[in-house]
Length: 381
Image (tube, rainbow, N blue to C red):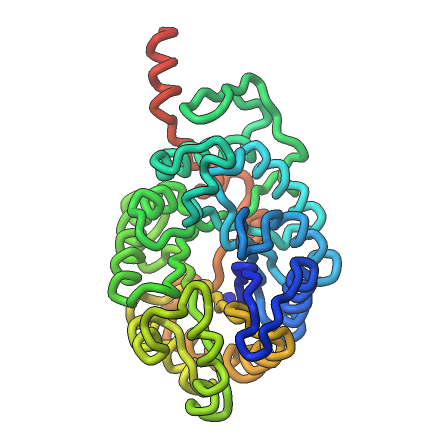
């Protein structure tokens, strides 16, 4: 099972000091956080993609390439890649370059983004968010798997005999996760292709998360990729830890109360009761995280959000030390002890996909044909 962290890259004032980091300081801090993740034995570092303040992470491939040059083992991913407002041709080429730079230590998570104004900035209509996500990913699959692509869809310029370059490393595209918290269409697309499904449940109760994961599992089995409990699932989570629960709450409370995404809403106690946020001891985080599998079934990737809300870098690095040294080793043992033998422990990696070969079922799923292309075919016929 893979464990890691993800950042949303927010630039938030530290409420205890009143100091706001510059964009450069925050980007450097995220780099140091990624390096610490590898140092303490985590498996994955993932970064978001945003194009509006207070976020500073607009170019994941640039940043991940820099981190790749300073790491050896860490899997580099996104959380998320905006499949709606980013041209799938750019995604195909940028992440193929990153694959080569990182020697295959790359996967990515597709998402629609939750910031409405971003859509028109990139010439898109948020009312078409779901169709954009679905159609663009259909094209991305083909760009990575076909040397010459003829394409006609609804949302971008048609392609004729187009070859995305460079080609994926070893002829093997990165493994893709589809991130969604409420859209059944995205879970359906993940299941259709046999891709991973990541439910970033940090704002949701576990009952809702379990429903979304169950839907994806049923459809994964329906499309013939394996039994429902073998579907590739990832979850989010967030935690803040100290030697005692009282100490953890005392330190974390001002950050929670003033965070752009938390503050001035439910109390810390209400939020920790209703969502996966755990503020307490490492043992409490272990117990809470193990409970995720009771709700959604045995899964393959757990990512924690640890560097948000204005937390200063030294405090985040200390949290990662606790996570990597005290929490994750126990979780690895406990999750594997409960996992049935037929349920995969790890999600696909570049190495496992290469080993599976170009004739692997997941690689060869026939691309879905968008409605516009079907209509054009009928007219020409």
